[in-house]
Length: 120
Image 1 (cartoon, rainbow, N blue to C red):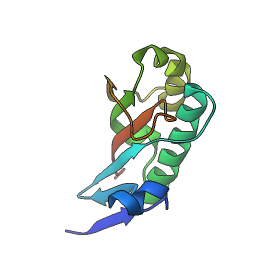
Image 2 (image 1 turned 120 degrees about the vertical axis):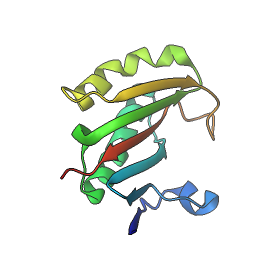
Image 3 (image 1 turned 90 degrees about the vertical axis):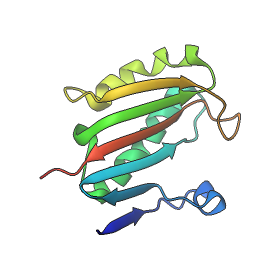
């Protein structure tokens, strides 16, 4: 069983001992991703860009995402992200869960984790 690990060289990867994504057995598992930005929508767009880069490196794309988890410290900030998410996933919406929880640093307003398949 081959395992491919993808790193984005983010500051927490080395500190916490993880990588951005792991590809194995036809699956792409992208770690929870946060990003910079002034608003939750800015951070959402930026996190999705980081995720997209990992998916592309894995040989996948947003159309192959089957599961997404959104984590926010304030659930009321989720709705402003909906148009960005609808644009990103378009005609291929994944199963989704939103969790209200604390994130690793209070400056982060959203964390996004996805699981995708590798296209055949």
